[in-house]
Image (cartoon, rainbow, N blue to C red; front, side):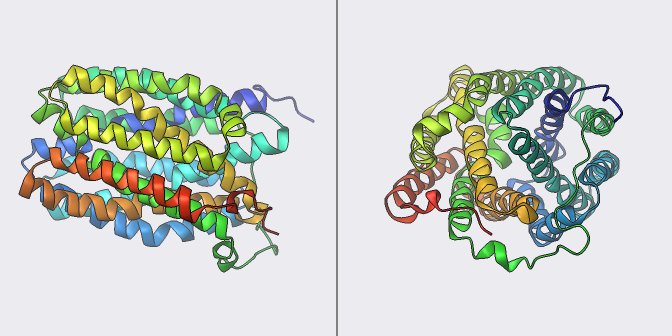
Length: 387
């Protein structure tokens, strides 16, 4: 057997370090649209309409990943395509043009985290290694790159689009060092997608994630504008804030496996949703960008929730559906929720302002904490793996 240049676990650590760097440049997309004169309604319309298309495509992409001969090559392909598409947005300020290009981009971009999650989780599960440190490396990479991209944005917001493409190239090269991961439905081992929907605990976890993402959708779509316009923060300070908040995630991600085992998934999700509500209520009341930087440190709650949900779902489904379920979860969390919160949030932002959106976010998170912990989850999270 040929000896690998980099050990598999080390390769996954390095790759995840680079993978989440891609999220940094896209943080400036809404700022760019605001700079070229689009209204909050138009910004919300672009993110919502593109999310609708992505919503329809994601289950197919997830099934394709579970049936592919090499998840590695599929991930490289979709990263390459987004690297080419994202800078094309800059060629025109026409709303329809941006909508078309961004829709193509976001459809492929949304499939990448689920592919990475399924590959990383499967390797950790089969090798007996901890998943927490792998995901933690993403926070480290994001934090370091966010600080750099924040400085790049000083020259122009447009430069962040090219920064994204450069980060993509680095990720494509690093995938060559990962062990080859094959879809478990490759060949004649295909199972119907409806089998996933029969798994009630998984469906409930996805529903919880969707409700929480309704609250977070306000943040994803409009927080950058809120921070730079209403609180008076600069683009560079915005990047610094995101960098610091990512650093705060590191210890929680490193010990995430232990935290989940000690507290339990059900109780942990309640705590996260409750603290998230306090975070959004605090954002509603704050008037200083530096105070908001302190509140932003609570962003580790969102990442820890994703890890807890992903790890639990991965343990509840058979190997044939691991990527499909991760893709479905990502779709519902970051696409279906954005469809509602971005579109309606944009209309509300133009009507009543950005600040009240975070009061709505807090109420949604608090409601999710009470309803799911008290009435929905019950003992479902302890059910066995789907056969």
